[in-house]
Image (cartoon, rainbow, N blue to C red; front, top):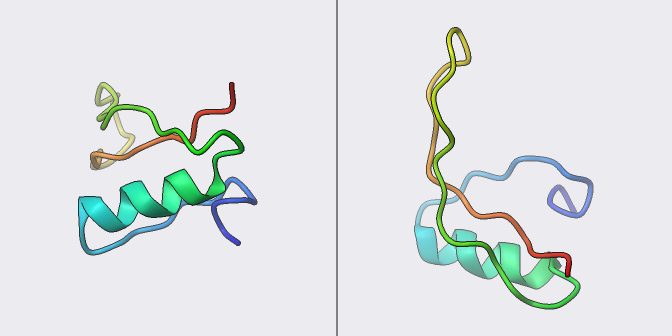
Amino acid sequence: MRLKANGNVFVTSSGYAYDACKAVSPIHKVSAMQKHKKEKDQGKQYYHYHPMLK
């Protein structure tokens, strides 16, 4: 529910993250694992996935 509402979800493994992200993708595809460039005062950055929309 949080993923479908564009919320963040924290899980205990990258496999769980991948599966959850794939489940909410309308085409069942997931981006490669990402870690965005750390920007000043933005806090810790975590590796993550994005659901593909097209």
